[in-house]
Length: 126
Image 1 (cartoon, rainbow, N blue to C red):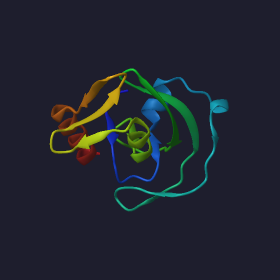
Image 2 (cartoon, rainbow, N blue to C red; image 1 turned 180 degrees about the vertical axis):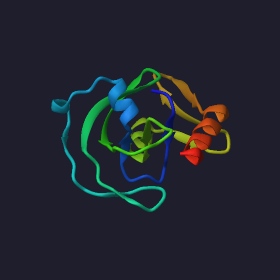
Image 3 (cartoon, rainbow, N blue to C red; image 1 turned 120 degrees about the horizontal axis):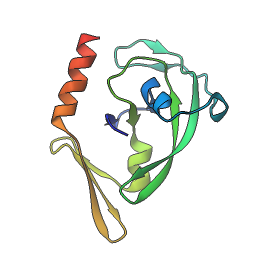
């Protein structure tokens, strides 16, 4: 997955339409989810459904419950605290990276400032 936001303050993991379509998921893969969410701009969004998928980070795989939201985002997904905690991630917004221990070594996921700028520009233009 590309263009994934790691948000320590978010309440649920979010999947946007681009990722849902890109993974060729089917309606029968989804389960009901009807609790409304508040978006970053303060609007209420009613999700379509949710799905549990494995997310691989380096050699580690964690099952994540994504809420599928039919809304525009320049990101494909938002990952939150539960994912961070399950991997024992230490994140640094200053250094734009997360680190976690895996199989006797330290794994590192590094954020791209270029992609961040592209996402921000796309969101502003939308």
